[in-house]
Length: 121
Image (cartoon, rainbow, N blue to C red; front, side, top):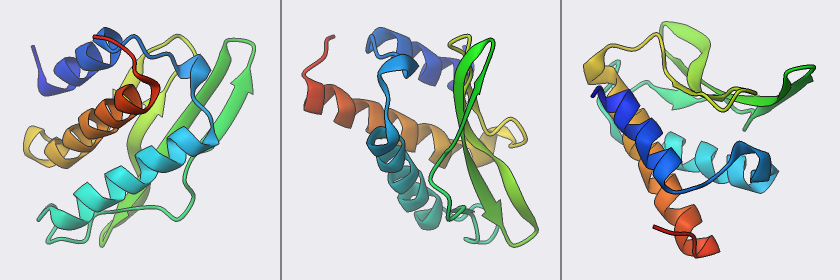
C-alpha cells in the first residue's frame, strides 16, 4: 500500500466524512499542513500553504474542497483535495519523498479531530 493509500485508510478507519467538515475543520487542516511544510526541508524549505485556507466548490456531483500550497518555483498546487465522491487526493504532483509532510500533517489532523469529537476507533 502506498503512503497516500495508507493516509486514505486512516481517514476511512476514523469514520470521518467530508460532509461533516466545516470551515473551522479545514482551517485547522490548513494550519497543520503549513506547520509541517514549513518544518520540512522540501524544496529548500520554501514549501508553504497558500494564504487562502480552502476553496469550496458545489456541483451536481456534490461538495468538494481543495487546499493549495506553493514553493519558490510554483504556486497553487494541490496539497489536499476532498472530492465529492469521497476520494481524498494528496499532492498528486509530488514524489514519494516530497509527500511526507503532507501525509504526516493529514494524519495528525485526523487524530486531533477524533480526539475533539471522540470518534472511534
